[in-house]
Image 1 (tube, one colour):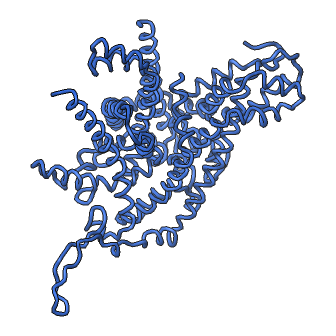
Image 2 (cartoon, one colour):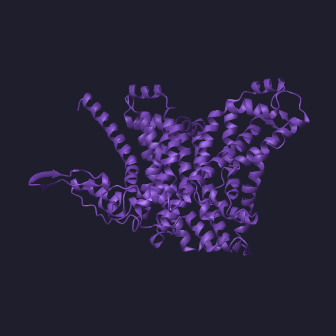
Length: 310
Length: 298
């Protein structure tokens, strides 16, 4: 790929200047990247084998952090909560997003652009700010969630209690509902863009062949949007696993009652910056990294398998 | 059911679904806006807008019907005046604008330059740099929080804006995005022509390359501006002095310090969201299409 002496892509004779030019263009990025990404990445390996008391005082402890982590019940609470939230994202959020995208593609729909914009807009709101809002929306008695459900379900003869404890007993469902508001429109936008690639002639041919809407979806639409769907799944997975601000703000800098709002990154934050052990925090960080890398590898493998199978 | 009936049902179904989605999206915004104009008493009394119930009263011997309308007079702007008065929220607004703009502009310059080098130059180490960038896409952000904090401590950059801006200048995905945009948007012939005309490398980059990838510049500026604006964990970790807090941290402080002051919390949240929403409305077209282009082409 590289040519001795360097030079531009064109056939022009290389000069000393051309040899240095790409490095000059790369320099600002490379310097910042080396100092603030590569070095911390390297350092996080070392840190994860230390116990620290604030950023200054460190002591080498080998793999103790990792073995402690495996036996730490709080870490398992964090992991299971985070997994639950992630499952909610994948199996509740994404189907709704895809459904909305399909509905939005209905031919002859007026105001499609405005609807898309409106549904997308919550994803512009930072998680901190959305968390501020949902903290009050999920309050007992006064909160919009209970008030709304109470009013809507009353005509159906269901008495929704105003004391339903979203933030007391049902923490993860509450967080999943909040994430629906934040990200459904965002994911829908990706599915919408992907649906533009579905071939109209194939859909019409399927109609002629007598395939119903469900059959058409699985036989024509789904295969066509598969690459984008894979990308969206991976992004949701990575994003969901990094859940932090939502519970941290809602529960006012804690992990909620009985740690029901504890997540991996929240535990990392508490360990590193409230307890002051950057070493343990780094070990948690590596646990997170390994989980996410495994997910990404699985996704690559399954994508490759599908390509080979097709 | 006949065909027309089925069609009508389909029509009603799609519109119904979209209506519900739209209402569910917009209601929290409205609820929060209403709450931000309420005193605590009023917050407990009404769900959305304060309501003056209809009643019949006798005045000067005559029977008059009163009420049955929204009680606008029970709304207050007190929350906002306290926010910008005693709480100095304007400071947070200025900090957020400063941090987001500077980070956005510098990161865009860094990444556009890097993407240009990777896209249009053959040089020793290009493959290495490209692999490095692609591999870095896989590093989860939270992993770097603790070691970056330690690094900033050693560099004496804790509690400074530089400590927030510098680590955000080289996101690998930015270089990746610009490499893709320049690959597909800048033909080699144009660069060659510029060089034959004797344009310097820098001039070629600024005058020829950058205008050709303008949509990507807009999208990436917006992405970095937004993510800096909405970033909470970095400023929370790096900054200590309240005068330096951006809105994300200032709002969290509001919740810690004024836990029972609902109107105030919502007013602070509205002030934090509004500038971003306006920016989004202005930029929306390029932004949304730019955001999805990478995924759909891939």
